[in-house]
Length: 209
Image 1: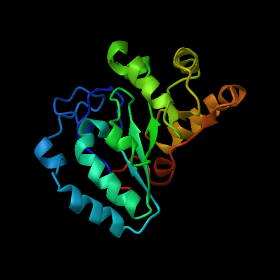
Image 2 (image 1 turned 90 degrees about the vertical axis):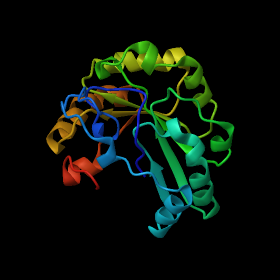
Image 3 (image 1 turned 180 degrees about the vertical axis):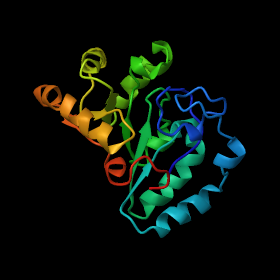
Image 4 (image 1 turned 45 degrees about the vertical axis):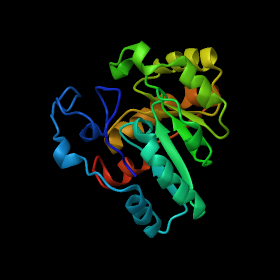
Protein backbone atom coordinates (compact mmCIF):
# COMPACT_ATOMS: atom_id res chain seq x y z
CA UNK A 1 0.00 0.00 0.00
CA UNK A 2 1.53 3.30 -1.07
CA UNK A 3 0.46 6.51 0.65
CA UNK A 4 0.92 10.04 -0.67
CA UNK A 5 2.66 13.04 0.82
CA UNK A 6 6.13 13.35 2.34
CA UNK A 7 7.86 15.71 4.75
CA UNK A 8 11.18 15.34 2.90
CA UNK A 9 12.14 16.11 -0.70
CA UNK A 10 14.97 13.76 -1.64
CA UNK A 11 16.23 14.76 -5.06
CA UNK A 12 16.67 11.14 -6.27
CA UNK A 13 13.34 9.86 -4.88
CA UNK A 14 12.00 6.95 -6.94
CA UNK A 15 8.37 7.82 -6.13
CA UNK A 16 8.22 11.62 -6.61
CA UNK A 17 4.66 11.28 -7.88
CA UNK A 18 3.60 10.82 -4.25
CA UNK A 19 4.73 14.31 -3.15
CA UNK A 20 6.54 16.42 -5.77
CA UNK A 21 4.01 19.00 -6.87
CA UNK A 22 6.67 21.58 -7.86
CA UNK A 23 9.16 19.52 -9.88
CA UNK A 24 12.05 19.81 -7.40
CA UNK A 25 13.25 16.20 -7.67
CA UNK A 26 15.69 14.96 -10.31
CA UNK A 27 12.81 14.12 -12.65
CA UNK A 28 11.95 17.81 -12.95
CA UNK A 29 8.28 16.82 -13.25
CA UNK A 30 5.64 18.70 -11.28
CA UNK A 31 3.05 16.01 -10.60
CA UNK A 32 -0.62 16.86 -10.01
CA UNK A 33 -2.08 15.89 -6.64
CA UNK A 34 -5.57 15.54 -8.10
CA UNK A 35 -4.26 12.88 -10.50
CA UNK A 36 -1.98 11.04 -8.06
CA UNK A 37 -3.79 11.09 -4.69
CA UNK A 38 -7.07 9.27 -4.17
CA UNK A 39 -8.72 9.61 -0.72
CA UNK A 40 -10.26 6.37 0.50
CA UNK A 41 -12.11 5.31 3.62
CA UNK A 42 -9.87 3.23 5.95
CA UNK A 43 -12.44 0.40 6.02
CA UNK A 44 -12.45 0.30 2.23
CA UNK A 45 -8.65 0.24 2.16
CA UNK A 46 -8.55 -2.65 4.63
CA UNK A 47 -11.10 -4.65 2.58
CA UNK A 48 -9.12 -4.12 -0.62
CA UNK A 49 -5.90 -5.25 1.01
CA UNK A 50 -7.47 -8.32 2.60
CA UNK A 51 -8.89 -9.30 -0.78
CA UNK A 52 -5.33 -9.87 -2.04
CA UNK A 53 -5.18 -12.88 0.26
CA UNK A 54 -1.50 -12.40 1.09
CA UNK A 55 0.29 -12.91 4.42
CA UNK A 56 2.27 -9.65 4.40
CA UNK A 57 1.32 -6.09 3.53
CA UNK A 58 4.04 -3.44 3.22
CA UNK A 59 2.97 0.17 3.76
CA UNK A 60 5.13 2.70 1.97
CA UNK A 61 4.97 6.25 0.67
CA UNK A 62 5.66 9.09 0.62
CA UNK A 63 5.88 9.11 4.37
CA UNK A 64 3.16 6.87 5.87
CA UNK A 65 3.51 8.19 9.41
CA UNK A 66 2.35 11.62 8.25
CA UNK A 67 -1.16 10.14 8.29
CA UNK A 68 -0.82 7.45 10.93
CA UNK A 69 -4.11 8.30 12.65
CA UNK A 70 -5.87 7.09 9.47
CA UNK A 71 -3.43 4.23 9.10
CA UNK A 72 -4.10 2.71 12.55
CA UNK A 73 -7.57 1.25 11.77
CA UNK A 74 -6.24 -0.27 8.54
CA UNK A 75 -3.33 -1.94 10.31
CA UNK A 76 -5.62 -3.14 13.12
CA UNK A 77 -7.92 -4.79 10.60
CA UNK A 78 -5.02 -6.48 8.83
CA UNK A 79 -3.42 -7.69 12.04
CA UNK A 80 -6.79 -8.92 13.30
CA UNK A 81 -7.03 -11.06 10.17
CA UNK A 82 -3.59 -12.55 10.80
CA UNK A 83 -1.76 -10.48 8.18
CA UNK A 84 1.74 -9.26 9.00
CA UNK A 85 2.37 -5.55 8.38
CA UNK A 86 5.64 -3.74 7.74
CA UNK A 87 5.71 0.05 7.58
CA UNK A 88 8.42 1.86 5.64
CA UNK A 89 9.34 5.27 7.07
CA UNK A 90 12.10 7.84 6.72
CA UNK A 91 12.54 7.90 10.50
CA UNK A 92 11.68 11.56 11.11
CA UNK A 93 8.15 11.08 12.47
CA UNK A 94 7.64 9.21 15.75
CA UNK A 95 5.10 6.38 15.70
CA UNK A 96 2.16 6.84 18.04
CA UNK A 97 1.40 4.29 20.75
CA UNK A 98 -1.77 3.20 18.96
CA UNK A 99 0.25 2.25 15.89
CA UNK A 100 3.06 0.43 17.71
CA UNK A 101 0.45 -1.47 19.73
CA UNK A 102 -0.76 -3.16 16.54
CA UNK A 103 2.46 -5.15 16.34
CA UNK A 104 3.42 -3.78 12.93
CA UNK A 105 7.15 -3.83 12.18
CA UNK A 106 9.04 -0.77 11.02
CA UNK A 107 11.58 -0.53 8.21
CA UNK A 108 13.31 2.79 8.91
CA UNK A 109 15.24 4.39 6.05
CA UNK A 110 17.12 7.49 7.27
CA UNK A 111 18.32 9.62 4.37
CA UNK A 112 21.98 10.39 3.74
CA UNK A 113 23.64 13.59 2.55
CA UNK A 114 23.31 12.64 -1.14
CA UNK A 115 19.52 13.04 -0.76
CA UNK A 116 20.03 16.81 -0.87
CA UNK A 117 17.98 17.26 2.32
CA UNK A 118 19.48 19.25 5.20
CA UNK A 119 20.70 17.04 8.05
CA UNK A 120 18.49 18.69 10.67
CA UNK A 121 15.44 17.69 8.60
CA UNK A 122 16.43 14.13 7.67
CA UNK A 123 17.97 13.00 10.98
CA UNK A 124 15.84 13.43 14.12
CA UNK A 125 17.73 11.84 17.05
CA UNK A 126 14.79 11.51 19.44
CA UNK A 127 12.73 9.76 16.78
CA UNK A 128 15.60 7.43 15.93
CA UNK A 129 15.79 6.48 19.61
CA UNK A 130 12.06 5.66 19.58
CA UNK A 131 12.54 3.24 16.71
CA UNK A 132 15.58 1.53 18.25
CA UNK A 133 13.39 0.57 21.22
CA UNK A 134 10.80 -1.21 19.07
CA UNK A 135 11.30 -4.95 18.50
CA UNK A 136 12.05 -6.05 14.97
CA UNK A 137 12.93 -2.61 13.61
CA UNK A 138 15.28 -2.66 10.62
CA UNK A 139 17.34 0.33 9.47
CA UNK A 140 17.87 0.55 5.72
CA UNK A 141 20.25 2.99 4.05
CA UNK A 142 20.25 3.80 0.35
CA UNK A 143 23.88 4.20 -0.74
CA UNK A 144 25.05 5.72 -4.00
CA UNK A 145 28.73 4.86 -3.48
CA UNK A 146 30.96 2.88 -1.13
CA UNK A 147 32.00 6.15 0.51
CA UNK A 148 28.41 6.53 1.80
CA UNK A 149 29.05 3.61 4.14
CA UNK A 150 31.23 5.86 6.28
CA UNK A 151 28.25 8.14 6.82
CA UNK A 152 26.21 5.08 7.79
CA UNK A 153 28.99 4.04 10.20
CA UNK A 154 28.65 7.37 11.98
CA UNK A 155 24.87 7.14 12.27
CA UNK A 156 25.01 3.55 13.52
CA UNK A 157 27.51 4.50 16.21
CA UNK A 158 25.80 7.74 17.21
CA UNK A 159 22.31 6.25 17.53
CA UNK A 160 23.17 2.64 18.51
CA UNK A 161 21.37 1.24 15.48
CA UNK A 162 20.99 -2.51 14.94
CA UNK A 163 19.75 -4.71 12.08
CA UNK A 164 21.38 -2.65 9.33
CA UNK A 165 20.48 -3.10 5.67
CA UNK A 166 22.23 -1.44 2.73
CA UNK A 167 20.53 -0.98 -0.63
CA UNK A 168 22.17 0.52 -3.71
CA UNK A 169 20.62 3.61 -5.21
CA UNK A 170 19.35 3.01 -8.72
CA UNK A 171 16.27 2.80 -10.88
CA UNK A 172 17.39 0.31 -13.51
CA UNK A 173 18.51 -3.33 -13.27
CA UNK A 174 21.97 -2.32 -14.48
CA UNK A 175 22.36 0.35 -11.78
CA UNK A 176 21.22 -2.04 -9.07
CA UNK A 177 23.58 -4.81 -10.19
CA UNK A 178 26.54 -2.44 -10.38
CA UNK A 179 25.65 -0.94 -7.00
CA UNK A 180 25.54 -4.35 -5.32
CA UNK A 181 28.93 -5.27 -6.76
CA UNK A 182 30.40 -1.95 -5.61
CA UNK A 183 29.03 -2.19 -2.07
CA UNK A 184 29.13 -5.92 -1.35
CA UNK A 185 32.62 -6.44 0.08
CA UNK A 186 32.46 -3.49 2.46
CA UNK A 187 28.92 -4.31 3.61
CA UNK A 188 29.83 -7.94 4.29
CA UNK A 189 32.97 -6.79 6.08
CA UNK A 190 30.82 -4.76 8.45
CA UNK A 191 28.52 -7.76 9.01
CA UNK A 192 25.53 -5.82 7.70
CA UNK A 193 22.82 -7.01 5.32
CA UNK A 194 22.83 -6.21 1.59
CA UNK A 195 19.63 -5.92 -0.41
CA UNK A 196 18.85 -5.35 -4.06
CA UNK A 197 15.56 -4.09 -5.50
CA UNK A 198 13.90 -7.21 -6.85
CA UNK A 199 10.96 -5.43 -8.51
CA UNK A 200 13.37 -3.16 -10.44
CA UNK A 201 15.55 -6.11 -11.44
CA UNK A 202 12.50 -7.93 -12.82
CA UNK A 203 10.35 -5.16 -14.30
CA UNK A 204 12.57 -2.10 -14.47
CA UNK A 205 11.49 1.33 -13.25
CA UNK A 206 7.74 0.86 -13.61
CA UNK A 207 4.84 1.90 -11.45
CA UNK A 208 2.27 -0.57 -10.18
CA UNK A 209 4.54 -3.62 -9.92
